[in-house]
Amino acid sequence: MKDDIIQIIKSNEPNVIQTYLKDYVLILKNKISESTYDLTTQSTLCPFITPSLETIDARLKEFIRLHHIDLCRTISYQIYKLKSQIHERDLFQQISSFDLNEEQV
Image (cartoon, rainbow, N blue to C red; front, side):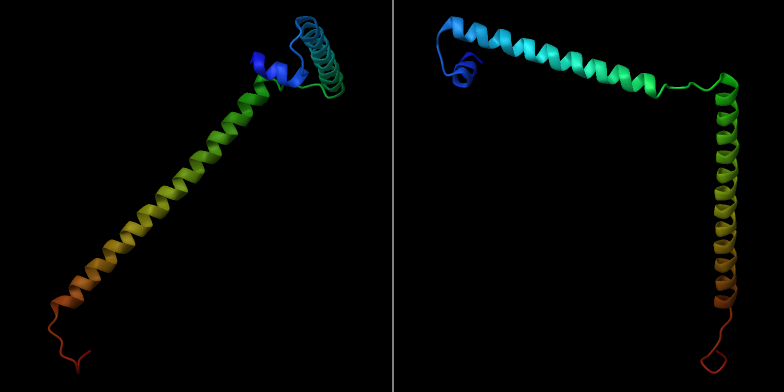
């Protein structure tokens, strides 16, 4: 790290390095202060409004209700699909049990 600083400053003198680092720290502090001020200003212009617990509870209940409906529909569809496959298999077995020749098909 020392070599990196020397390459940036292009000097080996401790006083020059110390002055550079002090100035750089001051610049960083100013940037942090500006950023903090900007964030504070933005947060006051757009305050975060926390919904009430009743509102959160109502929204969660609605989410659960909708999720339950979706889950029921998915299960019903899977049951219908399974019954359809079973029925198709049974029909195929019934048809396969008959000895049909080419003329009868």
